[in-house]
Amino acid sequence: MTVDGYTEEQLRVAVAAAVRAPSLHNSQPWRFALRDGTIEVRLDPARRLPATDPTGWAARIAGGAAVFNLRLALAVAGVPARVTRRPDPREPDLVARLAPDQPRLATPRERALFAAVPRRYSNRAPFWPDPVPTDARWRLLEAARDEGAWLDLVVGAGPVNAVAAIARSADRVLDRDPAYRAELATWIRRERSPDGVPVGSGGPTGEPQDLLPQRAFGGRPRAPGRDFEPEPLVAVLGSTGDTAGDQIAAGEALQRVLLTVTDSGLAASLLSQPIEVPGAREQLRLALGRSGTPQMVLRIGYGQPGWPTPRRDPAELIDLPVAPS
Ligand SMILES: Cc1cc2nc3c(=O)[nH]c(=O)nc-3n(C[C@H](O)[C@H](O)[C@H](O)COP(=O)(O)O)c2cc1C
Image 1: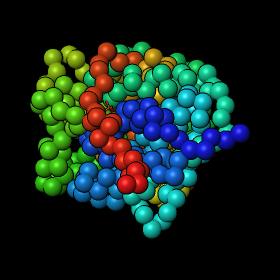
Image 2: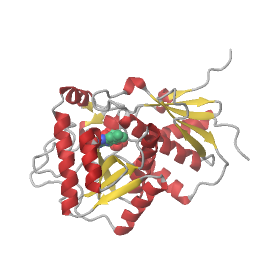
Image 3: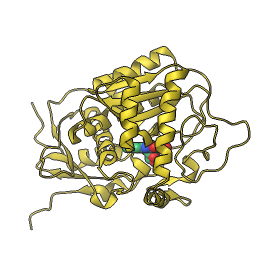
Image 4: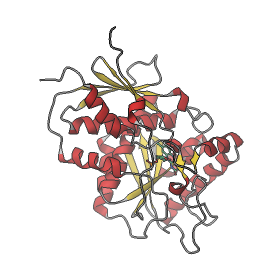
């Protein structure tokens, strides 16, 4: 038995989870529609970041992450989705269409990851020095693989320094561009706002001795001696191909990895400077000895408690079919 189509109530519950996905500068570039019983995810052209994301890569990663949350919510509701990514090439902003699949009970893994959705957030503060245990590392690798992506855990001082040097140099390249700096500034929030990065969540101001480059979200300088962890677990998530559809699937894999991080009691922050600068992305690929395409750099560890960032009201992001008059 299949379900005829998703209901408005199922859409609302799923969108409440979808909006918790990460997005570049918390730009939340998505909209959700119910059409012929399917859920459509679209990118909102008004929320593009032309200076930082001229190709739309970051928006597609965010869209994919939102799709993963929708998938989880629908699976937990007993109405799992069949996903078609980029169903219409004439509509580049149409990220995915989700149609009801065979009803079934959610798996314990789906339930655990869904429970992690409201608890996940980017933790940009220094982590505790404790290493990430082996079983948690395996879970992260498996999470990426389950979504058709790869995750490289960068192990050892030499490889970590090499990846960090590429990231710092990409950060310097971006920072030389006045349009990039101006765009970043418009997404920093000093007062409560439903989007953008609150200064309190943006992490402390970067310092010259930092291994990994922190984006300048206007945070406060840290207290003396409160340096970042000396040996962060750095991971690179990548995909075999790099089409728009591959990037959406990579966003789904990213979200699965991030929720697995949360479910494992760990914290993570994202670094995309080396993905945004094409030369740096290629250097990263070569440093990893990979034939696929890096899609995100993650820093993972045990974090001090933080808090989730605000989101826009899901009801404002839903387009329902117009009732016949
Ligand atoms: C494509 C993409 C790129 C990102 N790049 C960075 C980054 O370079 N530095 C950073 O601190 N956070 C980065 N983030 C995280 C976002 O800033 C974060 O998801 C957003 O502010 C919402 O906050 P939350 O993750 O706490 O929910 C990125 C997120 C996405 C989806």
